[in-house]
Length: 303
Image 1 (cartoon, rainbow, N blue to C red):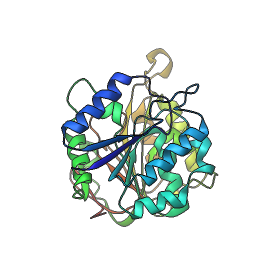
Image 2: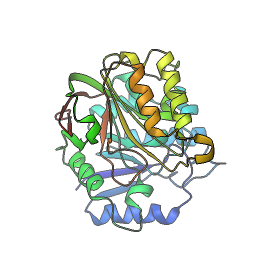
Image 3: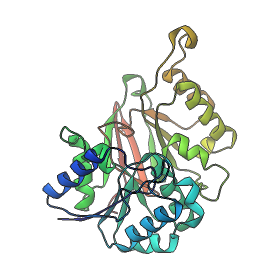
């Protein structure tokens, strides 16, 4: 049984039924679930005003929980990054608390690594992953269970056939990334980790491929992409092409363009994003990445 602390550092929880289902489901799995006092707070589009959400993060860090899990993403973390209790967060991580979330939580992950060098996780959120009406995705659940049991040491996935010819071997490289829009918004700030020789992963939701390319162009022109040993493309979901306007421009077009711009291998199909099937990824951990045919394996060892 694990102690899981639920907190809301970003947008307000609108789907309270999913929130309740998530709490109930985690409790049914045998976990002790502690809900932050402001988890369901609401101020404009946020889960409470800035001070409320900063205090919630501080309480999560002081909880002693095995996992501090966000209720949802949305928006709100980038505006409070200067005020986060970084020393307290680092102490909590050193003491065994794993901070887990995705989407807007990318800002937390990157800032914590940039400011403290500590590892936190891109992974599920309470409502969207554990609060679904159907049972949680098997792969997501298994990865989360591995984290709780301190057994998760890597992940693997299958590449498209077109990517099977080039063998990729990357050793001892820091893994970093998350939501592409949030990541790009941090560029040029103290909260953007200056990582060279890393494995960069990203995903997004509701972003047309031309906007994805525009964000990648910004990272390219800033010199970020050329400094990486590998780029992993996760799942891009809930966008709509306009055939009469796009004229064949699609996500694959962006991937081909990216490969023409950098020497590092660009691998697709990473099972992570705003989708049901997602793995958990440790931001800041050193990883080994190897491909053999269509099989990709990324290992980070015990954390």
